[in-house]
Structure formats: structure tokens, C-alpha cells
Image 1 (cartoon, rainbow over the protein chains, first blue to last red):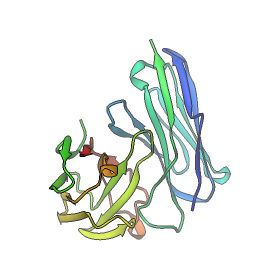
Image 2: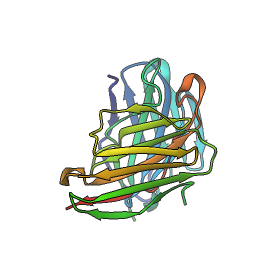
Image 3: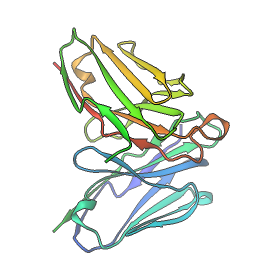
Image 4: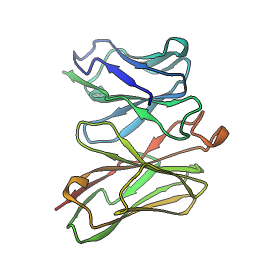
Length: 111
Length: 118
């Protein structure tokens, strides 16, 4: 099956710092999404971004489908940004509805 | 707040009990999902319903029995579970996109049910 690798696995920041999270995938995809899971377990959809660039406030994401990677940028980080960030992809022509999740990046933002 | 509502938030059950998890959404989504998440792991897909019909069963043991009574509701019936089934159970929904997939459709999760099997 498709491989989804996220880096770094862990990241510690001071409040106000910027960061870039990466998601590499091993096959062509027609669906790529970024999620944030807060310390209480709530999973929030941040971006649906199979290609191109999107921005939402301090967060932005870019997917270069031809090179099989996606980046999530967090600017001016806040303590509420702490949690696990997951990238999930659906393979082109593969099992419908099946998103494959990466192992996530655990982000800790210290005050 | 999430637009996908799950109840209960927490559940403790014995191995001989029968219980049900409930999920409801009113976004008009026609695809609904059950995921299981163990601590420090990503969510794992269990079941997918599309237009109230079971579309995917990821070889889940029969002690987990899904049900989709209508387009807004999704249940997960639990019976004779094992302690290793303790986990966070997440419901999700999405529009049913082109070619019967989640193509072009963000996934929306509920807050989950934390299940402990004793």
C-alpha cells in the first residue's frame, strides 16, 4: 500500500516561532488532508489540499503532487497549536474512501 | 464545537456487556465512517457507509457491528469486547464525491468516545 511519512516526528517550539511540517507519500493521490488533534483528542480538519497552496490565518499548506509531498506551515505559533498534526492521503484509483494516515508530528509550543 | 456529534464521550464496559456508540451529523453528508485510535497512533479505518450501505469493512472482528439507520445516524454495536479493544472510537463524515469516493471532500470528525473494556 501507499506509504505516508511525516517529519519531524516531534517538534518543540517557543511561542511566536514559525515551523514547517512535511508529508511525503509514495504514490499518486487524489486526496490529501491535514488534521490537528489537540491534547483532548479532538481531530480538526485543517486543509483539504490534493494540490496547490491554501492559507487559513496563521496556517498555510502546499502540496506538490508531482513530487509527492506536502508542507504545512505554522507561523507565530501559539500554545493552542500544540498537539499532533496528521497528514492523510487517498491513493488515485485505489480503495475509495480509504484515507491512509501518516504517524503524525507531535508539536509542543511552550509559553 | 464539532458538527459531528458522538455519544457517549466515555464508556466503561465489561467483556460480557453489550453497548452501542452513536454518531449523528446534519451536514447532508452521505458518507460516514468509524475509526479506531490507540494511544500515540494514527486513526485506523474500521467501516465506511455510503448512502446508508456498508461500503468498506476493514476486516473488523464481528464483535463490532455497525449500523446506519438513516443518512444522519451511524451506530457501532459492541458485544463481547476484549481489553485490547480499549481505544478512542471516532466517527467521521464527508460528502460522497465523484466515483463513489471521498474525492474532493474534507473529512469531519466527531470528538470521539473513549472506550475502556475491563
